[in-house]
Length: 143
Figure (cartoon, helix red, strand yellow):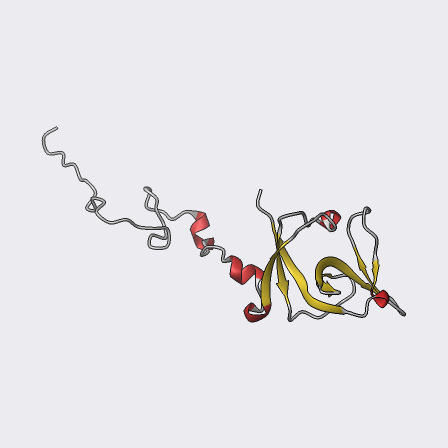
C-alpha cells in the first residue's frame, strides 16, 4: 500500500447547507436528470390567493356543503373581488348572519342551494337583507 494516497473531503461540515444552496448533490459527478426540472418550493399564498387585499379566511361551521366537499372545520379562502356568478359557492349575509351556499340564478329569481339534502334551498326573494360577502376561491382541509 505504499504510494497510495487517500483523499478526504475538503469540507468537514462546519456549516449547514440547505437544498437551495446546493443544486446537485451526487457522488458520481453527473447531475441527476431531475435537476434540470428542479423548482423552488410551493408557496400556498401564490397558488391560492389571487387578490391579497380582498382575500379572507373563514372556518366552516356545519355540514350544509358536505356534498360539495366542504366539511365542518375546513378553512374557506374567500375572495371579495370575484364576481357573483351562478353556480359559484359564496359566503352571503342573510338577515345579519353569514351562510355558505351555492348561488343559483334563473330568469326570475335567485336561490342559495345547500349541498346536503337535509337542508332546503333559500329563495332570496323572501329576504330583504341579502348581501354577497365573497366568493369561495379555495378550501383547505387538515387530515
